[in-house]
Length: 263
Ligand SMILES: C[S@@+](CC[C@H](N)C(=O)[O-])C[C@H]1O[C@@H](n2cnc3c(N)ncnc32)[C@H](O)[C@@H]1O
Image (tube, rainbow, N blue to C red):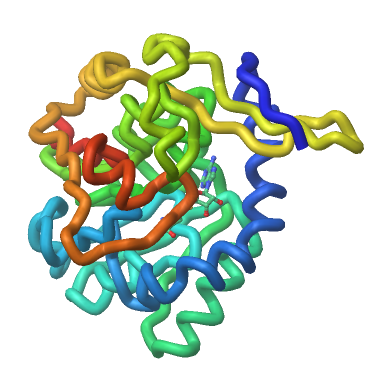
């Protein structure tokens, strides 16, 4: 596998990321499942939970969609709080893990295999939509994904999503001290791309938008931004998750949670 920064469109991003998450799902759940909790709502590698942050507000009685739901841990937590949560994910294997955990916990999250840019729901179906590191940084056509989110939401509803903090794109994706020296332009939006050596095909893609890009994208779809939460690294956490670590987390933000209301 080799890494490049190069342009990739929505079709190529989806062709790469669906199979990639299918291949990676078993390892992802084995490595991070305990940290996430089968019925746990964690917003990112810093481990802050929805119970601690209260970003979505009360969810009891609300109809909730999780986009990029993986194995549905967050939605299962919402269900236990009395919310009607539904999952949506591109990866069949992630959804299979969801079914396994549904059976294990006795709390099932009805879920659908689909993409964030084509939500298979009627207009104004949901009070709340959220993504915990799900989908949005993997999508090329972000305008379409946000337009779809706005379409399926009721006015006044809440939309919140966590992503890699945009400033992290300046640094090498290294959890050690090498990950503390800026080597790339913050303003370079060229996607991060992994290419399979054997097939020469794009096998994984992530897309970068600056903080200003996100503000413009959200307001362009009628969202009012009410907060950007930047979780601090907890005193008692010494866990490495990809490029996230205590070494970097004590100095630079790793996660940004955008919180909006649909006007
Ligand atoms: C980092 S995982 C997060 C999953 C879950 N929220 C969690 O915290 O474990 C990202 C998820 O986004 C999904 N995903 C990637 N691209 C997507 C797309 N275009 N539409 C929907 N889901 C997508 C992946 O399959 C994967 O399950």
